[in-house]
Length: 223
Length: 223
DNA sequence: TGCCTTATTGGAACGACGTTCCATTCATGT
DNA sequence: ACATGAATGGAACGTCGTTCCAATAAGGCA
Image (cartoon, rainbow over all chains, first blue to last red; front, side, top):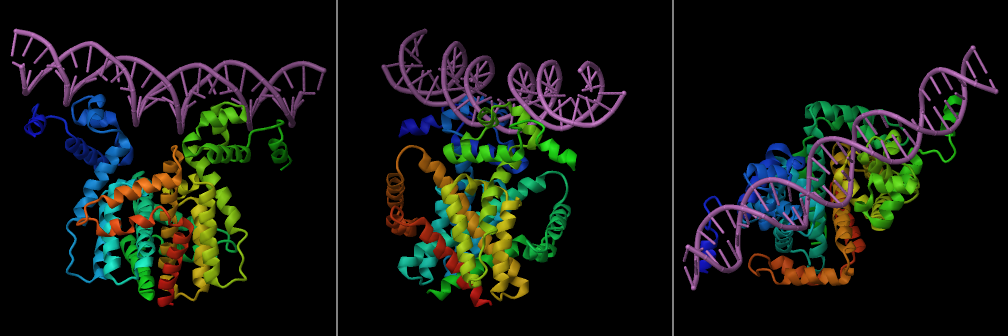
């Protein structure tokens, strides 16, 4: 164990999984998903790409570790003094805000449902579903329904970030899509044409919360 | 227009977007997402990769076209003689089955929510939500809730396909994950530990349908 | 019929990526 | 001091999406 303590300080400014993940998050936040390469990472850490592989198995492990670090900040600080329903809403909104602040997480979460970060969300939601008084046989289904909804939105949000990153501002691009929707065939796409007007002005966060509430309302009908 | 007709037959066995998309789907179905490269596509079509770019802008357009072709088969044959609730269930199950049969579509749908294939699903669900008698202001939110859930599951299913493709059979791998879940810290992960046992034996399709029903139940509370 | 024009083709080449490899460095226990 | 092994850094490999361009082949036109 003395060996272990020494091992972490063998060199000043030693490389470590923590420092690598930290640098990865900085790159991802600053320049998006596409900017995270082992070359860019090595440059930022002033080392070679080979050295990184001594601490991290591959890129997917690195991304999973980066996502887990940010999701952990959500689930460990959860409050339990609120009613379950409110805890779920707060947790879901927390995930939304993390994705909003770090859009690359959206892609990462929806890409691999078995990473630890997703497990944290599953536990956070599941415990509250249980506390909600949902019968045990359907707790799993109810929880994964909420989780799937969250991950679905995560993916959409990440795609949005990729899209809006390219130059023009959000309102203009959404307006362009709304225009396209309005010019669709009225016979084949009546609904899409109708909601096109709401697209540029709708609030993602509000819409997300509405979805969570809808599922919660559904869960309460079987409680 | 004569020119146009001739253009399509200028050469025998001429390359076309249709033939390219068809070949892409064959590769994707046979060997999965990772197998679709322009080199593999060119080899199957007995041409060069450069020629493909004459008919298709880039890989994302190709994937979107492939996904759209399979989703179109679902939404165009939709029945309207059933109650809206049943049409939504049937449509959702249709999407599930397409993803089940072609797991690469799951990744593609969740990666880009603005592709035409997703628009088709949005229209299919939205029209029925409308028919369900949902008040107009919340039709958009209700529809995107269902859509997000479907896309979330799509992403998870695609990840599952990637995972299960690697060697071992599904039951064994799920059992291994369940084992890992059961060995988690009982204080931090009580819920996950409890549902671990259900993991290897649960039916994805049934769980998916349960989620759809949950959201539908929630929608009916605001109808 | 023979040329000319242009859409289309096929494959070489480019730059970037994840990953592997390995000679080198450096703190440590002897 | 010196041998050991963890850790490093950068070259090199194979593959990918994409670009580029010389070669081709099928009309229209003389």
